[in-house]
Image (cartoon, rainbow, N blue to C red; front, side, top):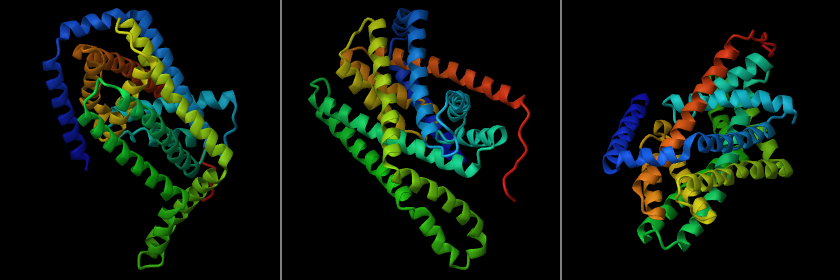
Length: 331
Protein backbone atom coordinates (compact mmCIF):
# COMPACT_ATOMS: atom_id res chain seq x y z
CA UNK A 1 0.00 0.00 0.00
CA UNK A 2 2.78 2.43 0.88
CA UNK A 3 4.32 1.92 -2.56
CA UNK A 4 1.05 3.06 -4.17
CA UNK A 5 1.44 6.43 -2.46
CA UNK A 6 4.83 6.95 -4.03
CA UNK A 7 3.52 5.78 -7.39
CA UNK A 8 0.68 8.32 -7.18
CA UNK A 9 3.18 10.98 -6.10
CA UNK A 10 5.34 10.15 -9.13
CA UNK A 11 2.34 10.39 -11.45
CA UNK A 12 1.49 13.75 -9.92
CA UNK A 13 4.97 15.06 -10.64
CA UNK A 14 4.74 13.77 -14.22
CA UNK A 15 1.46 15.66 -14.69
CA UNK A 16 3.03 18.75 -13.13
CA UNK A 17 5.96 18.50 -15.55
CA UNK A 18 3.58 18.33 -18.52
CA UNK A 19 1.74 21.43 -17.26
CA UNK A 20 4.98 23.36 -16.79
CA UNK A 21 6.04 22.54 -20.36
CA UNK A 22 2.73 23.81 -21.74
CA UNK A 23 2.90 27.19 -20.01
CA UNK A 24 5.08 30.28 -20.33
CA UNK A 25 6.88 30.31 -16.98
CA UNK A 26 8.13 33.86 -17.47
CA UNK A 27 4.55 35.06 -17.83
CA UNK A 28 3.57 32.99 -14.78
CA UNK A 29 6.24 34.80 -12.76
CA UNK A 30 5.03 38.16 -14.01
CA UNK A 31 1.52 37.27 -12.86
CA UNK A 32 2.82 36.30 -9.41
CA UNK A 33 4.73 39.58 -9.02
CA UNK A 34 1.49 41.47 -9.60
CA UNK A 35 0.19 40.07 -6.32
CA UNK A 36 3.14 41.32 -4.29
CA UNK A 37 3.54 41.19 -0.52
CA UNK A 38 0.28 43.00 0.15
CA UNK A 39 -1.66 40.52 -1.98
CA UNK A 40 0.02 37.54 -0.27
CA UNK A 41 -0.87 39.03 3.09
CA UNK A 42 -4.53 39.24 2.07
CA UNK A 43 -4.43 35.64 0.81
CA UNK A 44 -2.93 34.44 4.10
CA UNK A 45 -5.57 36.33 6.10
CA UNK A 46 -8.33 34.63 4.14
CA UNK A 47 -6.59 31.28 4.61
CA UNK A 48 -6.39 31.86 8.36
CA UNK A 49 -10.12 32.61 8.49
CA UNK A 50 -10.85 29.44 6.50
CA UNK A 51 -8.65 27.51 8.91
CA UNK A 52 -10.40 29.05 11.90
CA UNK A 53 -13.81 27.87 10.68
CA UNK A 54 -12.40 24.32 10.49
CA UNK A 55 -11.20 24.66 14.09
CA UNK A 56 -14.63 25.91 15.23
CA UNK A 57 -16.22 22.93 13.49
CA UNK A 58 -13.79 20.59 15.22
CA UNK A 59 -14.46 22.21 18.60
CA UNK A 60 -18.20 21.62 18.23
CA UNK A 61 -17.65 17.86 17.92
CA UNK A 62 -16.03 17.43 21.35
CA UNK A 63 -18.15 16.52 24.33
CA UNK A 64 -15.63 17.37 27.05
CA UNK A 65 -14.21 20.56 25.52
CA UNK A 66 -16.20 23.76 26.20
CA UNK A 67 -16.75 26.49 23.63
CA UNK A 68 -14.21 28.89 25.09
CA UNK A 69 -11.54 31.09 23.45
CA UNK A 70 -8.82 29.35 25.46
CA UNK A 71 -9.76 25.99 23.99
CA UNK A 72 -10.19 27.47 20.52
CA UNK A 73 -6.57 28.66 20.62
CA UNK A 74 -5.37 25.27 21.88
CA UNK A 75 -7.24 23.43 19.15
CA UNK A 76 -6.04 25.92 16.53
CA UNK A 77 -2.40 25.21 17.36
CA UNK A 78 -2.93 21.43 17.34
CA UNK A 79 -4.97 21.62 14.14
CA UNK A 80 -2.13 23.49 12.46
CA UNK A 81 0.29 20.70 13.44
CA UNK A 82 -2.09 18.08 12.06
CA UNK A 83 -2.56 20.01 8.81
CA UNK A 84 1.21 20.30 8.37
CA UNK A 85 1.74 16.56 8.72
CA UNK A 86 -1.26 15.85 6.51
CA UNK A 87 0.54 17.69 3.71
CA UNK A 88 4.04 16.31 4.18
CA UNK A 89 3.21 12.63 4.75
CA UNK A 90 2.02 10.28 1.96
CA UNK A 91 -1.00 8.97 3.87
CA UNK A 92 -3.96 10.34 1.91
CA UNK A 93 -4.31 13.50 4.04
CA UNK A 94 -4.59 11.42 7.22
CA UNK A 95 -0.98 11.47 8.41
CA UNK A 96 -1.59 14.35 10.80
CA UNK A 97 -4.65 12.95 12.57
CA UNK A 98 -2.57 10.73 14.84
CA UNK A 99 -0.46 13.73 15.88
CA UNK A 100 -3.61 15.60 16.86
CA UNK A 101 -4.86 12.69 18.96
CA UNK A 102 -1.52 12.20 20.73
CA UNK A 103 -1.11 15.92 21.47
CA UNK A 104 -4.61 16.22 22.93
CA UNK A 105 -4.01 13.13 25.05
CA UNK A 106 -0.55 13.96 26.35
CA UNK A 107 -1.09 17.68 26.93
CA UNK A 108 -4.80 18.00 27.78
CA UNK A 109 -5.92 14.48 28.80
CA UNK A 110 -8.54 14.21 26.04
CA UNK A 111 -9.07 10.49 25.42
CA UNK A 112 -8.11 8.85 22.15
CA UNK A 113 -11.68 7.60 21.75
CA UNK A 114 -13.20 11.07 21.99
CA UNK A 115 -10.58 12.56 19.68
CA UNK A 116 -11.10 9.76 17.16
CA UNK A 117 -14.84 10.44 17.12
CA UNK A 118 -14.25 14.19 16.78
CA UNK A 119 -11.90 13.70 13.83
CA UNK A 120 -14.43 11.48 12.05
CA UNK A 121 -17.22 13.96 12.73
CA UNK A 122 -15.16 16.91 11.51
CA UNK A 123 -14.20 15.11 8.30
CA UNK A 124 -17.86 14.24 7.73
CA UNK A 125 -19.12 17.78 8.38
CA UNK A 126 -16.45 19.31 6.13
CA UNK A 127 -17.05 16.94 3.24
CA UNK A 128 -20.85 17.10 3.59
CA UNK A 129 -20.73 20.91 3.48
CA UNK A 130 -18.37 20.62 0.49
CA UNK A 131 -21.09 18.64 -1.33
CA UNK A 132 -23.57 21.51 -0.85
CA UNK A 133 -20.92 24.02 -1.91
CA UNK A 134 -20.04 21.97 -5.01
CA UNK A 135 -23.71 21.52 -5.98
CA UNK A 136 -24.13 25.30 -6.13
CA UNK A 137 -20.93 25.50 -8.16
CA UNK A 138 -22.20 22.80 -10.53
CA UNK A 139 -25.38 24.75 -11.29
CA UNK A 140 -23.22 27.81 -12.00
CA UNK A 141 -21.11 25.62 -14.28
CA UNK A 142 -24.20 24.45 -16.18
CA UNK A 143 -25.22 28.06 -16.75
CA UNK A 144 -21.77 29.10 -17.98
CA UNK A 145 -21.12 29.13 -21.75
CA UNK A 146 -17.35 29.05 -21.16
CA UNK A 147 -17.15 25.30 -20.57
CA UNK A 148 -17.80 22.39 -22.92
CA UNK A 149 -20.68 19.96 -22.45
CA UNK A 150 -18.21 17.11 -21.95
CA UNK A 151 -16.54 18.97 -19.08
CA UNK A 152 -19.93 19.66 -17.49
CA UNK A 153 -20.93 16.00 -17.83
CA UNK A 154 -17.65 14.77 -16.32
CA UNK A 155 -17.95 17.23 -13.43
CA UNK A 156 -21.55 16.18 -12.81
CA UNK A 157 -20.64 12.48 -12.71
CA UNK A 158 -17.70 13.19 -10.39
CA UNK A 159 -19.96 15.17 -8.07
CA UNK A 160 -22.57 12.39 -8.06
CA UNK A 161 -19.96 9.74 -7.17
CA UNK A 162 -18.38 11.92 -4.50
CA UNK A 163 -21.78 12.77 -2.96
CA UNK A 164 -22.76 9.09 -2.91
CA UNK A 165 -19.54 8.16 -1.09
CA UNK A 166 -20.12 10.86 1.52
CA UNK A 167 -23.73 9.73 2.00
CA UNK A 168 -22.62 6.12 2.53
CA UNK A 169 -19.93 7.26 4.98
CA UNK A 170 -22.56 9.26 6.91
CA UNK A 171 -25.07 6.37 7.01
CA UNK A 172 -22.40 4.00 8.33
CA UNK A 173 -21.85 6.38 11.23
CA UNK A 174 -25.48 7.32 11.79
CA UNK A 175 -26.68 3.72 12.07
CA UNK A 176 -23.51 2.36 13.70
CA UNK A 177 -23.01 -0.18 10.96
CA UNK A 178 -19.29 -0.62 11.64
CA UNK A 179 -19.82 -1.75 15.24
CA UNK A 180 -22.66 -4.01 14.14
CA UNK A 181 -20.37 -5.75 11.67
CA UNK A 182 -17.59 -6.12 14.22
CA UNK A 183 -20.16 -7.29 16.77
CA UNK A 184 -21.02 -10.20 14.46
CA UNK A 185 -17.34 -11.05 14.30
CA UNK A 186 -17.32 -11.01 18.08
CA UNK A 187 -19.70 -13.97 18.08
CA UNK A 188 -17.47 -15.93 15.74
CA UNK A 189 -14.18 -17.73 16.36
CA UNK A 190 -12.52 -14.30 16.28
CA UNK A 191 -14.39 -13.24 19.42
CA UNK A 192 -11.41 -13.01 21.78
CA UNK A 193 -9.29 -11.16 19.24
CA UNK A 194 -11.84 -8.45 18.47
CA UNK A 195 -13.27 -7.94 21.97
CA UNK A 196 -11.05 -4.97 22.84
CA UNK A 197 -11.31 -3.27 19.39
CA UNK A 198 -15.08 -3.87 19.55
CA UNK A 199 -15.31 -2.10 22.89
CA UNK A 200 -13.37 0.89 21.55
CA UNK A 201 -15.42 0.97 18.35
CA UNK A 202 -18.68 0.94 20.30
CA UNK A 203 -17.51 3.91 22.35
CA UNK A 204 -16.66 5.87 19.21
CA UNK A 205 -19.90 4.81 17.49
CA UNK A 206 -21.92 5.86 20.54
CA UNK A 207 -20.38 9.33 20.34
CA UNK A 208 -21.08 9.57 16.62
CA UNK A 209 -24.70 8.56 17.09
CA UNK A 210 -25.12 10.95 20.02
CA UNK A 211 -23.81 13.85 17.92
CA UNK A 212 -26.06 13.16 14.93
CA UNK A 213 -29.12 12.77 17.16
CA UNK A 214 -28.49 16.24 18.58
CA UNK A 215 -30.02 18.02 15.59
CA UNK A 216 -29.19 21.63 16.66
CA UNK A 217 -25.55 20.67 17.20
CA UNK A 218 -25.43 18.75 13.91
CA UNK A 219 -27.00 21.72 12.09
CA UNK A 220 -24.55 24.19 13.64
CA UNK A 221 -21.64 21.95 12.66
CA UNK A 222 -22.80 21.92 9.04
CA UNK A 223 -23.30 25.69 8.99
CA UNK A 224 -19.88 26.47 10.47
CA UNK A 225 -18.27 23.87 8.21
CA UNK A 226 -19.94 25.43 5.17
CA UNK A 227 -18.59 28.92 5.97
CA UNK A 228 -15.10 27.71 5.11
CA UNK A 229 -15.95 27.38 1.40
CA UNK A 230 -17.33 30.90 0.66
CA UNK A 231 -14.19 32.29 2.33
CA UNK A 232 -12.18 30.39 -0.27
CA UNK A 233 -14.36 31.94 -2.97
CA UNK A 234 -13.61 35.41 -1.60
CA UNK A 235 -9.91 34.54 -1.65
CA UNK A 236 -10.11 33.66 -5.37
CA UNK A 237 -12.25 36.73 -6.12
CA UNK A 238 -9.77 39.10 -4.44
CA UNK A 239 -6.75 37.29 -5.87
CA UNK A 240 -8.11 37.76 -9.38
CA UNK A 241 -8.30 41.51 -8.74
CA UNK A 242 -4.61 41.55 -7.81
CA UNK A 243 -3.81 39.51 -10.93
CA UNK A 244 -5.63 42.12 -13.04
CA UNK A 245 -8.10 39.52 -14.35
CA UNK A 246 -11.26 40.39 -12.38
CA UNK A 247 -14.06 37.84 -12.51
CA UNK A 248 -17.57 37.80 -11.06
CA UNK A 249 -18.30 36.32 -7.66
CA UNK A 250 -20.31 33.57 -9.39
CA UNK A 251 -17.31 32.64 -11.55
CA UNK A 252 -15.10 32.68 -8.46
CA UNK A 253 -17.55 30.27 -6.77
CA UNK A 254 -17.53 28.04 -9.86
CA UNK A 255 -13.72 28.16 -9.99
CA UNK A 256 -13.14 27.22 -6.36
CA UNK A 257 -15.92 24.62 -6.10
CA UNK A 258 -14.59 22.60 -9.05
CA UNK A 259 -11.01 22.97 -7.77
CA UNK A 260 -12.05 21.74 -4.29
CA UNK A 261 -13.93 18.83 -5.82
CA UNK A 262 -10.76 17.82 -7.70
CA UNK A 263 -8.72 18.19 -4.51
CA UNK A 264 -11.12 15.99 -2.56
CA UNK A 265 -11.31 13.40 -5.34
CA UNK A 266 -7.52 13.11 -5.61
CA UNK A 267 -6.85 12.87 -1.86
CA UNK A 268 -4.67 9.80 -2.49
CA UNK A 269 -2.02 11.94 -4.24
CA UNK A 270 0.19 13.61 -1.61
CA UNK A 271 -0.42 17.37 -1.55
CA UNK A 272 -2.53 16.94 -4.74
CA UNK A 273 0.68 17.43 -6.73
CA UNK A 274 -0.13 17.90 -10.41
CA UNK A 275 -3.89 17.44 -10.11
CA UNK A 276 -4.42 20.75 -8.33
CA UNK A 277 -2.27 22.58 -10.87
CA UNK A 278 -4.06 20.85 -13.75
CA UNK A 279 -7.52 21.78 -12.50
CA UNK A 280 -6.58 25.42 -11.85
CA UNK A 281 -4.88 25.78 -15.23
CA UNK A 282 -7.95 24.38 -16.98
CA UNK A 283 -10.36 26.56 -15.01
CA UNK A 284 -8.21 29.66 -15.43
CA UNK A 285 -7.92 29.13 -19.18
CA UNK A 286 -11.67 28.61 -19.55
CA UNK A 287 -12.63 31.67 -17.53
CA UNK A 288 -9.91 34.11 -18.65
CA UNK A 289 -8.23 32.55 -21.70
CA UNK A 290 -4.87 32.38 -19.90
CA UNK A 291 -3.14 29.09 -19.01
CA UNK A 292 -0.55 30.99 -17.03
CA UNK A 293 -3.12 32.60 -14.74
CA UNK A 294 -4.29 29.26 -13.31
CA UNK A 295 -0.72 28.12 -12.73
CA UNK A 296 0.09 31.43 -11.02
CA UNK A 297 -2.86 30.94 -8.65
CA UNK A 298 -1.70 27.38 -7.96
CA UNK A 299 1.85 28.49 -7.14
CA UNK A 300 0.56 31.28 -4.88
CA UNK A 301 -1.49 28.69 -3.00
CA UNK A 302 1.54 26.41 -2.80
CA UNK A 303 3.59 29.20 -1.23
CA UNK A 304 0.79 29.76 1.27
CA UNK A 305 0.70 26.03 2.07
CA UNK A 306 4.48 25.90 2.53
CA UNK A 307 4.36 28.81 4.97
CA UNK A 308 1.57 27.06 6.87
CA UNK A 309 3.53 23.79 6.95
CA UNK A 310 6.60 25.54 8.36
CA UNK A 311 4.48 27.25 11.01
CA UNK A 312 2.73 23.96 11.90
CA UNK A 313 6.04 22.09 12.27
CA UNK A 314 7.39 24.92 14.42
CA UNK A 315 4.35 24.67 16.71
CA UNK A 316 4.85 20.88 16.93
CA UNK A 317 8.50 21.42 17.95
CA UNK A 318 7.46 23.92 20.64
CA UNK A 319 4.89 21.45 21.98
CA UNK A 320 7.58 18.77 22.12
CA UNK A 321 9.52 20.97 24.57
CA UNK A 322 6.59 21.10 26.98
CA UNK A 323 6.19 18.46 29.71
CA UNK A 324 3.42 15.94 29.10
CA UNK A 325 0.71 15.01 31.56
CA UNK A 326 0.64 11.53 33.13
CA UNK A 327 -1.86 9.08 31.69
CA UNK A 328 -4.86 8.98 34.05
CA UNK A 329 -7.04 6.79 31.85
CA UNK A 330 -8.46 3.65 33.52
CA UNK A 331 -6.39 0.51 33.08
